[in-house]
Length: 316
Image 1 (cartoon, rainbow, N blue to C red):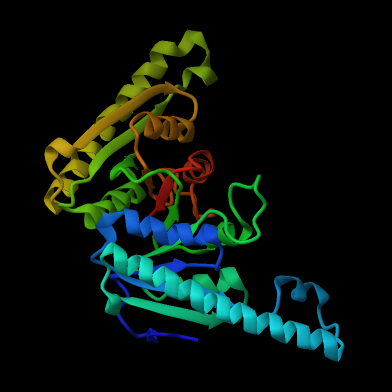
Image 2 (spheres, helix red, strand yellow):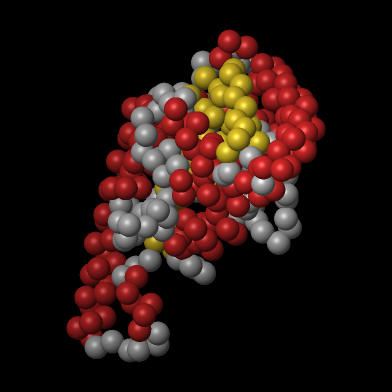
C-alpha cells in the first residue's frame, strides 16, 4: 500500500528515505528527525517492506500448511497490515508536529520482493538525498550492536549517504573525520549542505596514529619526521573543510579543529574525542585514504559505527 505514490522517475535529491520496521525502536528514528531541526527543509518518505506472513514462515521453504494454519497466517497478515498503517500514521503525525509539511511526507508500504535488505537498497538507489535507518530494529538481539538488515545495507549500498540514528540527545554538535581523502571531503560537503546557516557546531577532527608502537624506541625521531610530512597535508585539508562550511553559511566561530596524535587506533580516538567534545553526530567518508576497492566501506568507518553505538553516525 502506498499513501502517496513516489514515482521512480521523480527527483528524490531533496528527499530522505526512512526505513521503518514497525518497532518502537524504529519509531525513535522518526523522533531523531523531530529533534534534528536541520532536516526540516527536506521531503520525507516513510518506507516499510511489508510481508503478510511471519518471518519464521520462510524457514519452512515449500512446506504446505493445513487449512487452519493458512487461515492463521492470513489473520496474522491482516493484523500486521492494520498495525503498520497505524504506525506509519503516528510517525507522520510526529513529523508534522515537528514542523515538516504534510504534503512533503509520503508513506510507502511495499510488498516484500527480494528480501528486506535488498528491497531497501533497491529503493535507496533511486537518487535519494540520504537513507535514514537504525542500527537495530525489530527482533534484534540486545547484545548485538547492529541487526543483520542494517549490516547488509551498509555493506552493499554505495552512492547514497546512510544516516544511522543514535540514542544520544541532539545538541547540534557534529564531528567530521578529516583525513584528506575524497571521502572525507564528500563528508564535509554533505554536512555543509545539511547544516548551512542553521547554527550547528562543527568539530573537524584528524587522527595521526603513533607509529612508534610498530618501530620501537630506536626509530622515534624518524617516525616523528614521517608524521610531520603528513601534518601539512592535514592542515590543508582542515583549511579547505572550513572554507566549504563557511561558504555554506556556518560561522567561523562555530568551526573548531582538533588534531590528535600519539594514538594507536583512529576509530577509538575519533569516538573518544566525540564523547569529550559532547558531539551527538560523527560524519565520516565511506572510505578513507587507503580506498581499497575490494571493500565498500573503510575499516575506520566500520569501527566507529560499532564503537560509537549511542551516537548518530553519517556515512557519506
